[in-house]
Length: 65
Ligand code: SF4
Image (cartoon, rainbow, N blue to C red; front, side):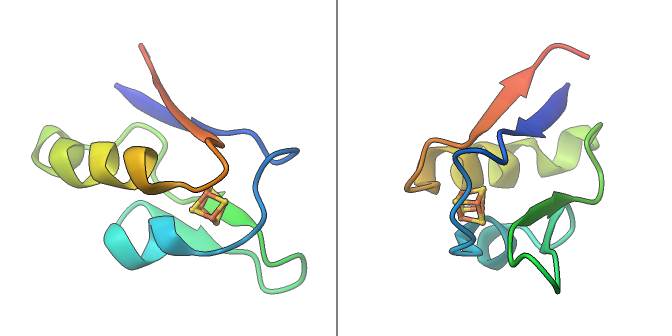
């Protein structure tokens, strides 16, 4: 599975990074989400799904890789 971000929607709250720093980080210049590991391992699925649910802008989604 793969997680993708819509940067048009992302407002840079970094909630995704707080929840799952293994997969998400924040761009130092724009302050928006960077996905470090789009094709995340299965043992991180629960945390990635939690991050997706907690994004206030609905900017994250899980796609079939
Ligand atoms: S939680 Fe959502 S809006 Fe905030 S940085 Fe992550 S993707 Fe962007």
